[in-house]
Amino acid sequence: MSEELARKFHEAYERLAPSFGYETRKETRDFDPTSANGMLMIAVCGELAGDLEAENKRTWEHRANSLARSYAPNIYSCKKCGNPCISGYCCGYCGSNSPSSTVEEDEQEVAEWQRFDSGETRSG
Ligand SMILES: [Zn+2]
Image 1 (cartoon, helix red, strand yellow):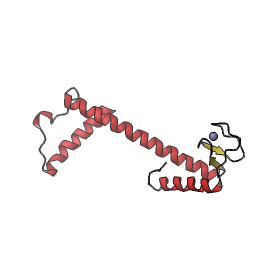
Image 2 (cartoon, rainbow, N blue to C red):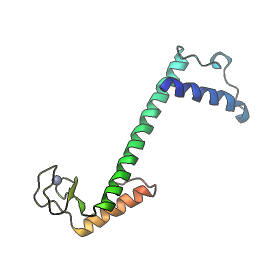
Image 3 (cartoon, rainbow, N blue to C red):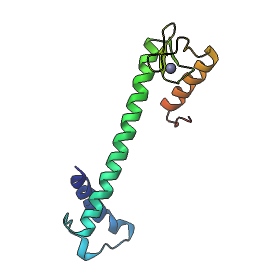
Image 4 (cartoon, protein in one colour):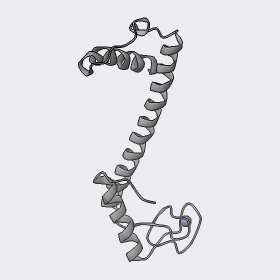
């Protein structure tokens, strides 16, 4: 996976370099996954792919949370531990028997998710 990405990156890099007035080095023009340059490219692509995957997972989780909340509006942040809990029930994470946040706090939380969904990053 990382090698395939590195190979594609390398091919696009070599193909686009002349249109930016950049001449690439002759000795690294063909992608060689066993060279130091090739191994470095694969390692860099592996890190970036991992970051993107984690970011996609976070985005998916947040969207799933927003969707769940739109069907079950009585999910609040536990005021003790911050995890999601359902109004009227004990917190399943910390066991608090009065976990509901105030309506005001919950509205702030919902506004945070909406900002996240609109593309801004979550602040807390
Ligand atoms: Zn809790």
